[in-house]
Structure formats: C-alpha cells, structure tokens
Length: 260
Length: 319
Image (cartoon, rainbow over all chains, first blue to last red; front, side, top):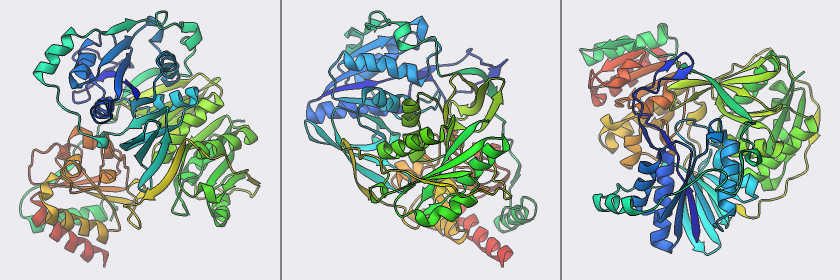
C-alpha cells in the first residue's frame, strides 16, 4: 500500500494572536505542524509498521517547511516533498486540492490521509474536495482504520448519532480526527537521522503544471480582512462558604441571567 | 432575487431547529427559499418542513438513506440544488454537514464556506464572517463565485416564529449508492442521550472530577437539568468520557443558553469549543483558573462540595 499524507505548517494556536488594521500581527507568531495532520502522519506510520505501507508526505506552501517535514521524518515517514510557489499565495481549499490532485496522479498512491482540518483556517474542506476531483471514495472525521486486504479498509468515523463503520475500497481519501491516535514524540536519534534525509522541493512547474492550470488567479473565495473576536470578559467570581455562594449564584442564574 | 436552498437537519426522525433558523435568515435577506429533507420514513415530517418556512420542499425518502453516507446525501442535495437553481446552499452545523458540504460545492463548482456566523450581500458579491484559528480571530471572506455552499454555525441565526411556508413538494429520485464507501453499521453510544450540539443547557466535566465518582456526580446534575453532558479533553484522554463528548477545538463546538464548566480549568483548546455560549457558569477550586476569565458567574470551590448544593438549590428554585 502506498500512502500519501499531507502536512500543513500553521500558526501555533497556543500563543496569543493579535489583529491590527484587518491583518494578523506577524510579530511573535510561531509555526507548528497542524495538530490534525500530526495524527495523519501517525496513522501513516502505524500502517507502515503494521501493514508494510510505503509513506510519502507532501506539504504545500508555508515558506521554509524544513522543521515540520523533518519532524515527520523523525516520526517515521520515508520520503517528503514540499511544494511552494508565489502563485499559491491566495490559495483556497479548491486550489490546494488541485495541487494535491497533481501530486496524487504522479505517484500511484492507494490511500491519501489528511487531517480533518487545518487549525489556521478551520475550513475542513481540502481532503474531501480532493476526493471529488479524483473521483475517489472519501471518509471524513475518521477515528479508526483497520486493513482488511490490499484493496479494502474498515474505517470508523465519528458521526452525529454515533460511530459509523464504513467498508472502504482503495484507492481512497480519509481525513482523520485527533482521537484516532496519540502521535509519537520524535526521538533525538530520529531527529538527527532526519537531518540527513532529502526533502524534494518543487514549484508548480516542477510538479508538471502551472498557475493557470491550477486556477491560482481565481480562488473561489478569499479572506479580505481579519477581525478580533469579541473578547468575553470574566463576570463575577464568588469565594467563601460553599452553601452560601452556590445559593447566591443559582439565584443569579435564575433571576438575573434568566437561564435556569 | 437570491435563491437559497436549506438542507434540513433531521436527527432521530425529528426536524431540528437549525432548519427554521436558516430559512428565517434566508427570508430576512429577501431570498426565495427551498428546503431539502433526506432520510428514510420522513414523510411524516412534511408538516414540520412546511412550518419551518420554505416556499418549496424537496424530499428524498428512501430506505437506503436510513444511515448517513456522505456520497448519496450529497447527490440528493445537488439534485435539489439543480432543480431549484439555487445560488446558495446552506447547511446547519453537524458532522454530516461538514462531510457533505465540500462535496456539494465541488459538484456545483461553488465556493464553500464552513462555520459561518453571518452572510452579507455586498454590491455584486457575497461576503461571510467566520471564526478561524481556534476561534481566536474572525475572517471576513469574499465569495468570488456566483454560487456558494455554506455550513452555518449553531446559534448564528434566530428563527422567526412568524415565518410560514407554503406546501410545494417535489419528490427526489433515490440517489445511486456509494459502492466504494459502504456504510455498514452505526454504533450508537448516544441513543436517547441529549445531543450536545443542540441542548439548551450543557454541563461539562473536567479534571477536577478526579475519578468516576466525580463524573457520576456531575452527570447527575446534567440529567436533572435535562442538559447535554460533555467533557474537557483531559477527561476523554483519561478514558472517563467517550471522545464524542469532548467539547473544544478538536471536539464539539457548542453554544447553549447556559454552559456549566464543572472542574474545568479552561485551556484555550476547551474555550474554543464553548465561548459562544450565552451564559457561562464555572465551578473550580483554583481561583486563578483561566475559566473564570470567560465565565459570567464563577464559584470557587471543590466540585464534590459544590455540585450537591448546586443540585439542591436548582431543585428548590425550580419547584
């Protein structure tokens, strides 16, 4: 089984993010591997260890992605490519999916694994649109994968009414949720070894396509401005005798907030 | 005039409130509206579908649609969108919607915007507002295509109680099955439990509960309030709660009228899942816990002591 897994470098959401004049203040931001993609990488590596799958990683955009890709190598991914091109600056999910389509078609893959969304846009679209473009079956929000044979997986996804069990025929696309696994921490030795591994760097031309073919000039949607979210401020905090303050708060919930 | 197709949200045979909310918003912006309902044995929902306020109802009712499968569901939405000539397709916020909306957008060559909280018709184009980066910022997004598919965040639009629809039913042909991704079974942990996504009150339990006894104590409070029962990630990771009960950035996003965070410290990850709630109550023994920075009402105390009193006092006030 040949697996293609996608990794996006995104802003670290653990840090504060400020908005000024409709844009995000770049100063002080740090970048990390998208959390859901990290689960996708772990999924791919487990399939390599348990079922002998070959693992390839692709990362699109994001400038210098060396650290992110090396981290995935240290986790056990065998080869990786980084596609970046100035034409991708305003890429939406459809454009990312078109680029991934080109990568897929050049590689004879059986399974594409993506995180279910990226924590910078929180869109949750790219993997699903890629499957549409490729005409492949797709299961999103996947929380478990079992290999049945070379051509079939048993996949579970977290749905609205419980866990949905799906028989999936390869080639296919899955997008994974964080609850699928606990990504391993790369070890020092793995990180050292990762430094020696090559990262294939490509622009759209090297990928065998062009900005025109991908439709880079015409994103279906584009962000025109960022705004700060309305900050919630803390209200009243009560300390002291538990019986007294709890009774007081229940009264406030019922008679002031009118929500009980 | 814009034409908006709303995808009806049906759970366990019941039409959910988001359908009327989305139709109300569509009507408020002067659009012509239709609703598409997909499922098995849903004929009896017709009065509710008309009542939700659409001018037209598309119904795909087939035994093979009893279990959710993104491919066939998307095919039904696309069929209805083409027949109605919709320029907008709106979904309520659910896992099924998130799986179907991008497919529909790709098939209609439309833009796709998820988790929107508002939609504006500017001169000649549409703009939407949506949270991003774990709820830390809002994006204003310009839609460059004529058609848009959107998933609307829970609680973004209010239902207009005066809104009335008219009965114009179109029955859709059953869609082809997805032979390469076949839904085999639904393992339901939820059953009769209150759905977190549309509960009026949500009670969530965190690390402060320490053990199963703590979890049961908080669960009893949730049950008495007829509330959805959720958890912080720590409780899910520790195996006390099922993963589909996790409230937070990587779990469920909820926006109830009242959110009770019991023994939850308030990590950014968790706040992202509940800071759209109308009123937040926090119970935590650490007075410095970040949850108090977002809570409207905070009780500093150990939940093992506070929750029993809370249950008692709520019973008193409700009787």
